[in-house]
Length: 466
Image 1 (spheres, one colour):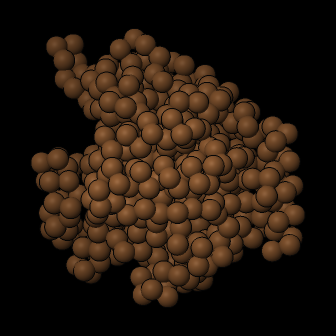
Image 2 (image 1 turned 45 degrees about the vertical axis):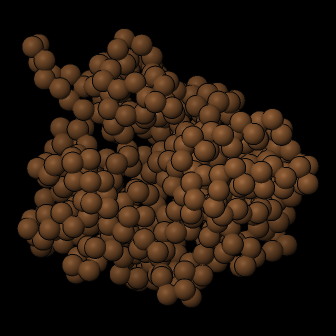
């Protein structure tokens, strides 16, 4: 069997777990990851690229041609682009132009993530249930803020949700419970550069209820659902309190929801976007991931992401039994219909994110990490690299924090409760500069609640009537 050199372009922990799966593929030759993942290289999963840092290369937009040149020079035959920033920058487009098989949506197809305004309008036009909304194009920050405040006052239903139109690493969402809080959150958006001329914001009704994540492999004009729903925990603190993050933990499968439910939800929340993008001449290739709120009035769409979730991917992908690269290349080539149904391990899984002090604001980096070797000895536990670096010292070398979310702790067990117990026990051994990392301690609690069970029953009634 011929071996194919492969390149993964990814900044999050999902890159580490994807690299682990790609390494298992029997036809994988040399496997590169950029930017490098320290743990993946240490484990012998990937080999260094030798390329300069992303900052030195000018970010993803500046780096894409250098990365394509690298791929050609190293005889790379397959590329996977699985993070939002490089996808939006059109990195995958450049590789396709070079004739390299690429698992990634085009930049234009990915605008359903990079533009919440576009996503909401497609949902409205295609009949996808979602929150009522209005969008505002920014020409002047003060005028836009005044228009939003006037709109909220006329509507007079609180809370109201304000979203930055572009990519914001999961942190461009502001939930406002009053006029006063709306003023403050709009000022935050201004300070975060989301109210500059030429940008847009979306103002929508607040959807109350448990949130679930759906994932599907998409190959141009068809899709295959992951057979389970997941649940992310978006805020930094327990009980869904504190500011929004990129995600602090995921559990799966959400109880009471079947593979048939997933197929039915895919018809409602994924297929309309697949067909809309095909109709626009920008078909989607990759993983599509909508987030859904289970409201008292049925399921409603929150957002659509154009890549695997993170920490969804480090929770789910270790459960995949089928060959990851076979599925990924079938997506890239539009041949999903030729695949047998992907196989997944039975049981439950969790990924808990460990974050540095200050996250999701200005994270304190450079903290010495201890406990990694102890956690690696735990049966059924895997550590995935969000943002680590290794530095040499007089006494050897140490791991240090190098970003906001630093490590993902994955565990699998017979059910969610047991998986969370295993992951929590392992996470408790990790320290940053001798202190406990930031982490949620209520991961998975909502999965067993009466509210969740009640909302699933409402979902079932909705699906039966659809």
